[in-house]
Image 1 (cartoon, rainbow, N blue to C red):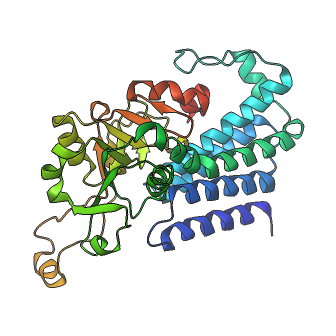
Image 2: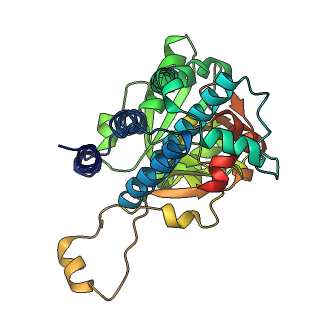
Length: 340
């Protein structure tokens, strides 16, 4: 079996694994699977130069993302690995400090030519080690975010959360604060009535229509991001926009848990294009009689503008929305973003 056939089989198996999982795997699991897939592709294709590597990453990430439009993590991981390769080349060549991300100029022609013609044999081992470190950082992101709970949640706080049942990061965040001795009350907004009985012991479950009556007694709101963008906006589970608007009305701070691998390097001019929809909640008979006559939309995400978010809680620190654009420089290279 040749390398191209093996790569196609790996990509096909990756897409099938995403589509067969219901409910969806956690974002960290998908991110680690993407890292491992790209590592295997690099090993099998064995690109000769840096230019070949970047072209291969762009091609495969575009095709994978086209198959799963809602998984922006695939694009993020591909661009992160491209930056790791650039950093290894510059380190071998003794390059200076990288240009700031907000620079309007691309790399000069001489630097670009050196990067494109660099022999991959010299950096292959170091690149594999860097990719392994990236995978380790993704695995530890949840613990790092959870450890910051003691700096944000205090005694006697009334904390309102959303999507606790589906977010492992949110559960770890609240569990760490609880184990640290914080005496606070947690209000969990559930999507289905079945979750009212299966909620953890340390939370008080309510439904979305009760948020307005509970917000006056709430001191903090904690949401989890499905993706966040350079302008400070983010996608949160459906219902989050209503919660954030009520929090702003009552001057309640809104914290959004946002691991670094969910940071999308592109400004989304139309975030609605990323919205996915859940299954139709209407009864079968009603759906059958109204088919083709009405559109029953059941969105999975809401878009939060930057003015509705107080802090993004990343794995390294807490970031205000206006500084998210600066955070891109740590994980992405401006040339890769411009060329993508």
